[in-house]
Amino acid sequence: MPGDREEWGQRVKSIERQFGAARFAVDRLRNDLRRDPTIAGRSPVAPYVADTLRDLAVTYLVRMFAEFESGLRSFWGAVKPGKKPMTEQLINGVASKCRVPDPLRVEVHQVRAYRNRVVHGNEYDEAVTPVSVADARRSLVLFLNRLPFEW
Image 1 (cartoon, rainbow, N blue to C red):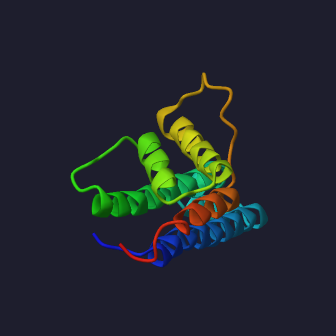
Image 2: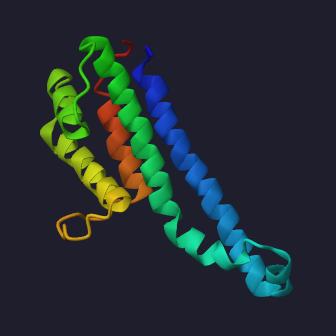
């Protein structure tokens, strides 16, 4: 699917905004449950509110990275048809082709590593540092901004 960097950047930013809305809603529900414990008896989701709030950021970070990766794959498919590299090589290849500064490439790999830890449970890898949704969005959008306007 052809694309442009503005479109893909907006998709990533939209996920951050959705995260904010979901966090607000779940936090509000948690507070309502504290004020009125009878709500819990009327709602089958009440027992899951604390876990949802705890896991919300990683859930949206995974979605955000998936959208970012789709954007990179769209670009890569346009410049290298038929090639489907693994994500690490995809990031490196796009970084090289689009002259992404190395510190930014490293930041994006940190987001990828954290996403992999969350998704695949690579708990043995202590070198993986958690990344906030805001930091992930910043790095991913800055990387996407290095791509051509359209492809």
